[in-house]
Image 1 (tube, rainbow, N blue to C red):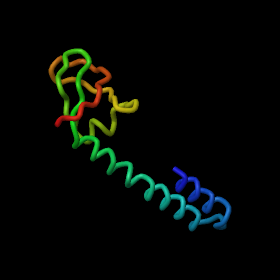
Image 2: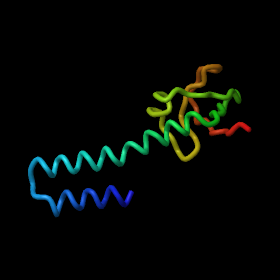
Image 3: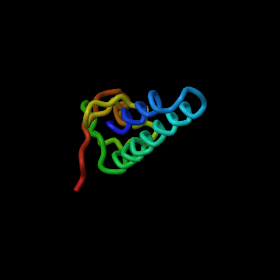
Length: 94
């Protein structure tokens, strides 16, 4: 997170206003977001989520995980078995 702050500081105060400032801000945002999307891909590929209602283990697609609300190790997903949206806890299989 400090890299993003540093990049915004450089863009805001050290680069004169204009196209290069915009290019710097966009570049910093892209460099910051690439690892975030990669980390989400790793999270989806490891383990599953357990439905709070029926106990069914859900393996969401990348898109479902990307758009689902989350808090720590839980995601708000729709269970394919009981068809209810609930906060599903992450479970790691051995």
